[in-house]
Each structure stands twice: as structure tokens, then as C-alpha cells.
Amino acid sequence: MTILKKAAATLAASAVFASSFAIVAQAQSVDEIVAAAEKEGELTTIALPHDWCGYGKVFEGFKAKYPKIKVNELNPDAGSADEIEAIKANKDNKGPQAPDVIDVGLSFGPQAKTDGLVQPYKVATWAEIPDNVKDADGAWYGDYYGVMSFMVNKDLVKNAPADWADLLKPEYKGQVALAGDPRASNQAILAVLAAGMGAGGAPGKEAGDKGLAFFAEMNKAGNFVPVIGKAGTLAQGATPIVAMWDYNALSARDTLNGNPPVDVVVPKTGVLAGVYVQAISAYAPHPNAAKLWMEYLYSDEGQLAWLAGYCHPIRFNAMAKAGKIPQALLDKLPPAASYEAAVFPTLDEQAANKEAVTKGWDATVGANVQ
Image 1 (cartoon, rainbow, N blue to C red):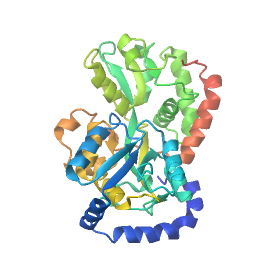
Image 2: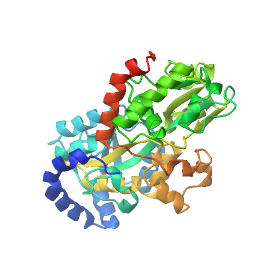
Image 3: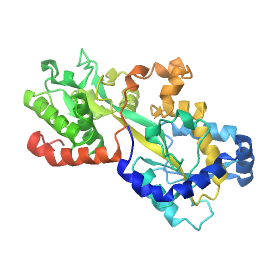
Image 4: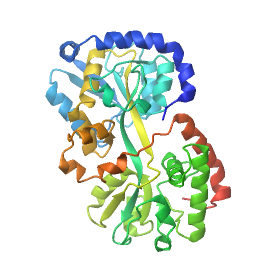
């Protein structure tokens, strides 16, 4: 699937600029980058809380491997838009308030390239990053993703649903919830898209409409619960089945610690992936340290650190096939085969689905989720 069809034309104007940077970036060997990065002596990150996607372990690993590089961590709780604004606000600042690297939602990568805020760089493992989640010139590239899943209270649900269609079964009456209001929550809006894909709809408006019809049928059958599902409501029994990102569900499973026991199921169809992307600031004060950071993130070690935090690293499929993922990590996850069919909707498809769901939920489903 090709990401950002519409954006392709807009980005074409910067292709020559990007390509020239890429050539320069790839002229350095990793050893040369290490030497240059250690000479710079610093790296500035932003918006990376240690409890998100295993970033605490990522920082520990990087610092242990490159002790000569001081890491400045800016505003761990910032959002993607804040990261972009930090680049803009510090274009002429070479101090520790200027981010070298960013980790942002998918839509922010292409726009940052269009605005000339990022510089391209292709890591050594570039070929193992799927083409549909990276910029061809290396301006931005997918780092990790989650897929929509079912978090299930095993005490109350004896037979966990295996697919979206199963949620319509009478045995799940009064048990199924979304992890947000589908008129406002991106997670819930994309859950409707995933359900529509499971019903055979193409990503975009078609799947959005089919997803609405699916939830309308579920609501009519009495299976849908109009309560925002989370770990607490699942444990209390108010929402025994919750559709949510797998990394949130897996973290909630650990938090609940067996009380109640939890299943996390990736549906057989409609496997929807949501991805974040990395990029290096065009104004990075420490460009070589930024490149070295990227090399670490996309190395086996960096990818496994993310996986330990339940975020699927972008090289997951390639690493699984090569036998590079420890069994202890795999045992904490749904089966690897569950992720092989993951679909990464384009920005246009996500926008079309959002419009269909937010505008059509009340009239089609009629459930006031709160």
C-alpha cells in the first residue's frame, strides 16, 4: 500500500534537496559517525517519556554504549506538534534547547519534510523498514507501531473473541466497548475502521461506513457497551472486552497483574496498524549524534528495547523471520503471525474514515459513549 498519495506531489519539489543530503549522509561509515558524534559530545531528544514504548531502557542502552555522549532530554510529556514547534523555535539556537531528533505521529513526518524542518538519513537497516512507512529520500521513517486488539477479562469471558465478527455473538451481550468516544478519540475512530476492514471494506470511507454498520448491529444486539473502556472498567466488569491498541492492552495486563487475568487478542482480519516516525532536525546542533541515535534505534538492540515496552519495532517481521527475537519477549506477545497481515492506512484513508465515523456515528449507531 502506498502512503501519502496526495502528499507525493507536494513533496516532489524538495526531492533534489533531500537526495543531495542523503548522498552526504550515506558517505559516512558508522565508525566515522561514532567518532564525529563523540566529538560533538551531546544529543538532544524531546517528548520521550521513559515509560512509553520502553524508552527508559533505550536511553540506558544508548548511554552505556556511547558514554562520551551526554543526552539532554527535553519535555518528555510533549506531543508531536510541540516537537515540530521546538524545531521552528530553535532554528538559530545551537544550545541544549534545540532538539536534534524527533519521534512524531505519522502525519507530522511528511509535513515536516515539506516545511524543510528535517534532513534525510538512511540507517544501515533501511532495507528492513517497509516501503509504505518511510520516505523514499530518508526524511522520515517508521519506528514502531501498535495494532488494534481486544483486551479481554478472562474471568468473565470464557471464550475470547478471535475476530471482529465474533463480537456479534450472543455470548458477548453487554460486554464490548471502545477505548474512547468514536466521535472524538483517534483510537476509537480507528477501531471502527479496523472493524470495517474486518467486514471486507477497503481502508478509508468504505471501511468507515462498514464499521459504522457493524457497530450499529452490535449495539442493536445489546453487545455494545457505551462506556469508555480502560483497565479499571475491564477489571470491574463494566467492559469485559475492550478494543484498543495492543501496546496499551499489554501494559494494562501487566498493571492488573492477574487480577483479573487478561487475554490480548489480535483479530484474524482487519489488522490495523498505527505507526510513529523518526526524523532528524534540519537544524540539529549535533547532526552526527543524531545519526548515531538513529543507528542505535534501528539496530537489533534498539528495536528489542521498544518491543520490551510492547511497541512493535518497525523491523519486527524481518527480525522474527531471522530468529532475532528472544522467546521470552515473544511469549509476552500475541503470536508473531498475528501481525504479518497488519495494514498501515494512508493519511488520506485515515482522514476519509475519520470524517465518515465522526459525522455518521450518532445517526448510524446512536450510542452515546462516555
